[in-house]
Amino acid sequence: MSRYTIPNPPEWPHTRVITVGWDGPLNTYWATAFDPPTSVEEDDVEVFWIGYTPCELPDVESLVTALRERGVEVPPFTVEALRMDKPIEGENFAGRPASLIIAEMARPHVPADQQARIDAALQGGAR
Image 1: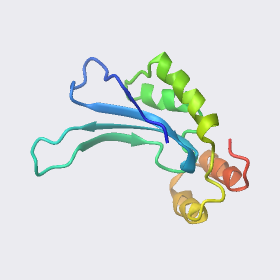
Image 2 (image 1 turned 90 degrees about the vertical axis):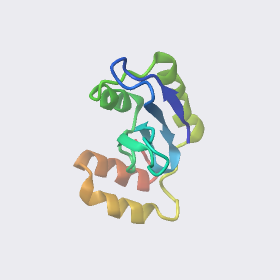
Image 3 (image 1 turned 180 degrees about the horizontal axis):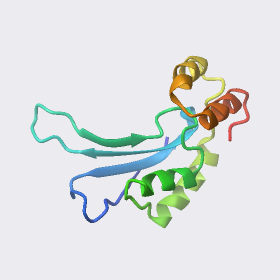
Image 4 (image 1 turned 135 degrees about the vertical axis):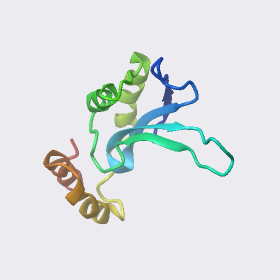
């Protein structure tokens, strides 16, 4: 799995942390944004988390679009690094011990196009 920290939009809190990456076992790009806790008793506060289901964001463009919808721009050098991660790290959803279980659990909660990508990945032809 790759992981990069990217800049916050200027109007966001400077303490917010946005990370992006490629998750080979889920065949998806992903992004998270968290704010730090306000006390030692609390956990980080999730602002958003996308790309946590199989084949959700299959290409860099879908990640960039999803982040733009949230007001976040991915720097060009990070986009290029992400493009290189997928072929290097691979798409290895198919054949993992829990893939079928994860696919069936995700199926009722994801759109039809994502279901088709999951089915293709399970057959070894992710895209």
